[in-house]
Image 1: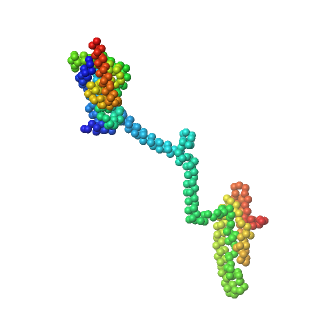
Image 2: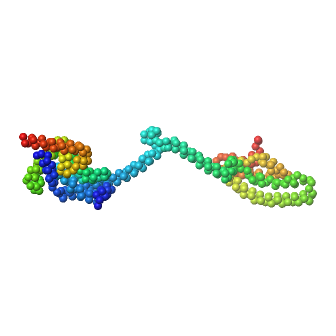
Length: 174
Length: 240
């Protein structure tokens, strides 16, 4: 079935269509939530919040952008709301996926989590920009559309992240 | 770690597969929220229809809670509607009256109530029958045969009328007796009627005076209260 027809049926109040829409997009929602939170339980909470918000605001989707783009924006909004409600970002369960990964990747996960925290402190939208551009493989224009900023802003953020990583490498090497 | 290594780590960072229980729980919660939102939307739709109806009624309302008549539209002013209703009532009433008088114009003539004056037919019935104008104009010029025939015919009519009047007299006396119990008949003076009807009569015989007096006494005797009763004869004797 055409995804647009499925969305239209769900917007008209068809619960079955909405269930199918959830099933087809839950993996995307959970994947980005996990990359943002880097914690399974928190990612599941964020994904559930995103599903509830999707039920509330599906009627507001006007087909002006791709549904995935609109969905990324919704998940980021839910993640930021969840962050404000929890009043914490750090977690002590970085090793919960140790059984699924090898030792080197676990070390990389620790390092990646530290870097993402630094990017989050670097400025608003830096972490989301790095996740969308580098992890999700989106173009600067697509990332700008999701985050509600211009493409040049995304380019400037990517440049800032690279400069920060260069300074960080120089600081570590010294 | 430089930026290239960060990008490589992010690209290779594979999230774990979502938990089936978490997926099912999120799906159930989202479907429940979806049902609630749809029910709320349906309720809001019905409420918006009702609010539109209420707004329409508010536009046509006749009273204002703000105590300011200026807030009301001009077509819902109470005085204006009352005036329009009065004009409509006048138009409808006038049309009905005009149509009724057009069908029967005699209704427009005002007449005195019949109950105020009672003229006993007994006295009038005792008057002689009217004489034709020819017989009254030239009685001398007619021959004797014709005059005798006329007198015979006259006498026969008199006899017949006397028989009829005698029968009706008793009936009328009884009827008047019943009527006199409730009201006092005001008979016109006989002097006012007699000249008209007896102008051409040669002989006037007035009878029933005794019955009238007796009837008057019976009325006073049978009355519950203290009343006075006069008959037509008594009225005729009053001074002008």
